[in-house]
Length: 353
Ligand code: DAH
Image (cartoon, rainbow, N blue to C red; front, top):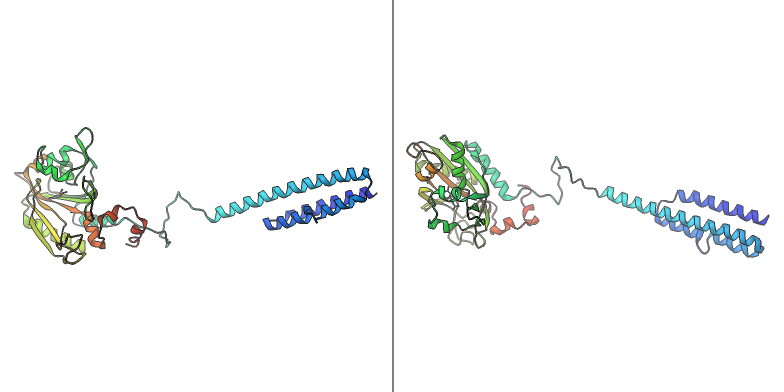
């Protein structure tokens, strides 16, 4: 009788444990439940203690039943604990979810927001200006051959002007990383064939240079070329003044000096007054107050010939814009190396531009 009573009690205990376990949804509640049923002063211990008064026979069967129950309760508790842990992890993942496969369709104001690189911003603005002036935008390879980078531009094999543009050669000594975007003068003429035409070509160029605040081994240029009939230096100067006032959206002081570039004759250096120091002198303008911005000139007949254009019939001009310099002037950046620093703090400043 006594034995039956005890077995009943164990069954009731298991039933109430199972009911309570179903409502247990946190680790803290689970710990309470464990203490209440399996703890030293818990319900199962209470039952086991009362076995002391039972006969040895009873003690054996009841003890076994109680121990089996203890095993089942412990297993259920562990299973419930694993379930609760899984739910916590799932909830965290759901809250911290990032979709790396889709681009946002609208700008969000987050502290992680960044934007285009300043060189890209200025390049795109320039492209818009040139498009509005009827220029085409061309692209060319970074890995060039000797012909397009030098020979066709009137810089033959042994010409000292090659030394001014030391660069990275490939092992075959026929290919190199282009030293300037002037390569596109030739590629552009080859493509367009029939003047009149005008085009620009932005891109990266490479030189084997020691770096300082205004020199980098990799930088950006935008080459321009206009070919037609009876083009004069006056056309060139007027065009460049118009271009610079579009770029800076104000009048800037400029000066023109003779400059030597084998692919133009006559050639010029167009400088603008330093916008960082207003002409007083700083490390960007090397204390001269002027920054070389737009070398240019009338296209040399040999270059026209190499591009397949008859110099007896057509002529024109070319210019090379230093994009990085322009960016530095525009944003007041006093060290070109910042542009390639990869610093997110640096780029973030242009997010709203
Ligand atoms: N390619 C020259 C350089 O990188 C720049 C240049 C000078 C381009 C005169 C031109 C030009 O088109 O007419 O130094």
